[in-house]
Structures are given as C-alpha cells and as structure tokens.
Image (cartoon, rainbow, N blue to C red):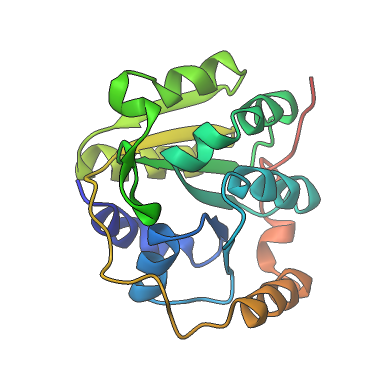
Length: 202
C-alpha cells in the first residue's frame, strides 16, 4: 500500500474534519490531492502532530479531528501516546503511516523495521481502539469505522517507503497557520450535530 493512495481513498471524507499532518511526505502528498482550509500542515515540529491534534480535539469536542502522522514522528515522542491515552478525546482519529523509515530525512530505518509495534504500544498507553492495516482495503474500512466509532483510535497503516519527488509546495506555511486559525473560528453545522464527540478524562 502506498501512502498517497491511502490519502486519496479517504480524501472525500476529510471535508468536514479538522486535519493535522506531520511534516514532509504526508503534508506534500495531501496537498497534491487538493488543499483545503481545514488542513493544517505541522512543518518543522517532528513528533508533535498527535499533541497538536489532541489540543484541537479537546478545544473543539464537537468536531471530528484527524491526525496523519508517521512512524518516525511517533517514535520521537512516545509520550504523546500516553497523553492521548490519558485524555481519550472521542473525536480524534490518529493515523500513523508506518513505512519503517525516516523517508523525509534520508530514509534511515526506524524501530518498526526491527519489530517495534506502534499499535501495540498505543494500546498499552491506554488508547481504547487500535488497529493495523496492511492493504488499501483494510485501511479504508478501518478509517471509516474509526470515524463512526466515536472513540479515540490509533490506526497504523503499513505503507511502502516511497514518497513525492519533492516536499516544497506553493502553500506558504505562515499563511496556512492563519488560514487554519480563521477556519477554526467559523461556525460549523457539526457543532450542533455531533453529541458523540465528547471527551473523557481518566
């Protein structure tokens, strides 16, 4: 499974979500499919996509939040998983694209290439729903299930170590920040229509 294909398969369902991506290939590939004002590309902050997504999910409990992360980033900040497991926002789906390498910075192998299991780590950290998908069909089904579950989910997608030819796009990072901020301030129908997206703490 290629990450770009996985993103394209679920792209139509991101229209009403608050989407955060990690740096590098994920951000570039999502932009190549089509940028939206509800997409925030967390560049130059490796390891913090799940933390940013958590903050947004807690601040906007009636909105569905989706984080597109990478194995290298998650492994850099494993404490992010324990924090997710502590607060357990029901409106957050955390997708981890695991290509077993730091592709965006040279392709060095990560710990998942030698047996570390991010889904198992997430479950042990207290995240209530975890799963691993290895095919596009498995990923698409698991993603749709996660959106409908109304429960914090970490979905690990095992993908090939391939990416875009370049990571520089026409979208200015500073403008993306302000555009996303403006989007968050706009009224949205889901604020009255998603009672399942509440938060719990333990």
